[in-house]
Length: 459
Image 1 (spheres, rainbow, N blue to C red):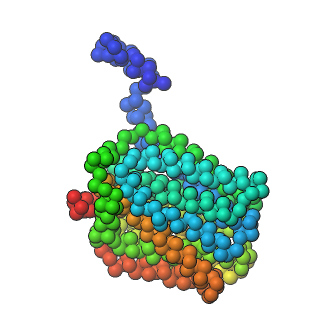
Image 2 (tube, rainbow, N blue to C red; image 1 turned 90 degrees about the horizontal axis):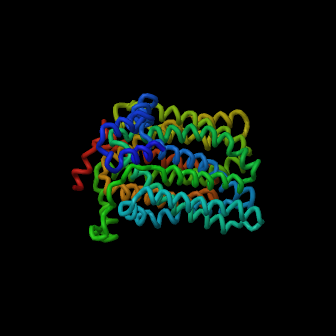
């Protein structure tokens, strides 16, 4: 309200009048004073309104997604009595489009305004997810619809994630990227405490499709907060400046696989994605089907990981580099999360011993997973030029989806042959392969992020 009044007061012939200026400054605080007040109340990136808006949108979306992610699987398992094969197909339906559209998403994220892409992706995902409780309410929900929803949500998620990760360097300076990612990840971890604590109970109370509606609503709120961001983006290339889709896509591929730091990180990401997806497909079937855990109990146990993840983000947010630098922190964090994953298949009963193993998994894996993500993403953001950020992240998404798709097929094969528990042990072995790739690469020797290294290389 004040900015509009001030503009009117200083318009026309009075614009340069000292009296008019004094009048405008005499009423309520001007924007500079408001910014100073905000800076005194908040420090770091909390004093930057647009970062707070991006943080708010992301946080609301994370809350819904953590509930909706479990709810969609439980909708298939509990509402539609899905088999292991059908759960695997549902997981695949959320991976195939990501694998197919990642490169296209990266090119278009670097061609268009990233904020608009995020808003459109949020609203599209909300519409798709709202269809689940509506269909369930009318008795018409089928596995085919869940597959379709998975396809749509996954496709739009690729566009949103590529745009979001590329957009953060627009709002904060590169020296503040670790702080920004740590605040985002730390908040997400805190939300995990709440969401996992109540997600299982919400599935039981609202029935699984009703919990999916919470996820859908979260995307509407996310779109609103992103829409309110006012920091201008760099102008995207004009149609005349574009070099062609295939040429631009190939440039993004070269950025990742010709760089001495991005290449091993990409290979380690591929191995990790393969392993994580095997566990993702098998662990609910194993813990709820073979071991006998109730959804509400699992939700409470998984909430422990949220608490420990906050600790990992707290360490990263204060610039503390464990083990000697960015690279060693990334590698050792990968080692601890691989070791912590072993506790899941070691759980063989729903008694206190089994609960202890699952809690140990949350205590070890989650804080180091958080630290890994913060430093990994911040390093990639800091060494990649802004004009190819979208394609760099899209290539990583391509690897993640591609190897996760392979992991889905591997999970189905392992579950049918060696069993759910042995399949999870095999996945843990793949996590240690990821650790070996990082330990044998130049990443292990990086002490601080070299913000100009890749920019100079591709310039």
